[in-house]
Every structure is written in C-alpha cells, then in structure tokens.
Amino acid sequence: MLDHKVQDGVLIVYLKGRLDVSIANEVEENLNDLIDNQGHTRVILNMQEVDYMSSSGFRACISTLRKLNAKEGGLKICGIKPAVKRIFDVIELTSLFDIRETEEEALKSFRN
Image 1 (cartoon, helix red, strand yellow):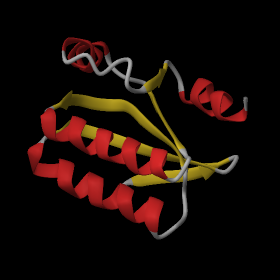
Image 2 (cartoon, rainbow, N blue to C red):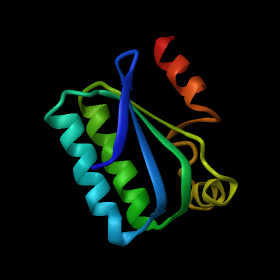
Image 3 (cartoon, one colour):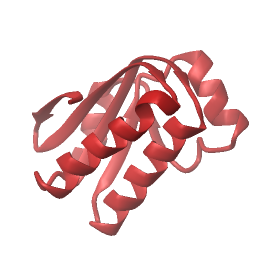
Image 4 (spheres, one colour):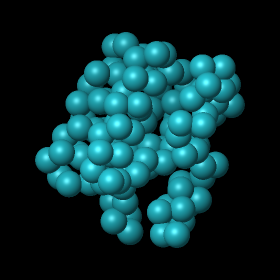
C-alpha cells in the first residue's frame, strides 16, 4: 500500500523510488482503490522521492488523472525532481498535469 495521508479533505500520496513497469501497476491499483473504494476525488501525488519514471509510471498517472476528471475531482503533482521533470517535458506531458513545486502549494491550489 502506498504511504498516504488526508489533509484538508485532500488525499496526499507519497511515491518513492523508481516508478517503472515493475511497480507502476501496483501503484495504479492502489490509487484506484483509494479513489473508488474510499471516495477520494482530490489527490496530490508527492513525487519528492521518485528518482525515475518510465512510460508505465506516466500511464498510471494519466489513468489516475482521467479517473479523477470523470468524478469531477482533481489531481495535482508536486515535488518533481529535475531529472523526472525533464522526462515530463520531453514527452510533452507538463501541460496535461497541474504541477506544483511543493505539497503546500498543491494543497493551497485545491482551496482556491
């Protein structure tokens, strides 16, 4: 199970390590469970401790974004390391996601 907490009605999920094919499906299943079975519609993915993301990791994020959009929720991503951010930029996904520098900024953006 993913490390997570709820603050101000927002689910904050802490991703760690390498988000590659070996764990991306598990991450996606855990996120689906938190969204579908626990009713969370406002989610922050804190990627401060993610060192690498493969296409499988991006697929899990996009799937989560679509699921939340369908439920009229929202997804924010924060704390992306420069190396991972470059991958977001190269595959032109930066504009798809609401990316914030810090967890606090992401939380504030849900309040507005």
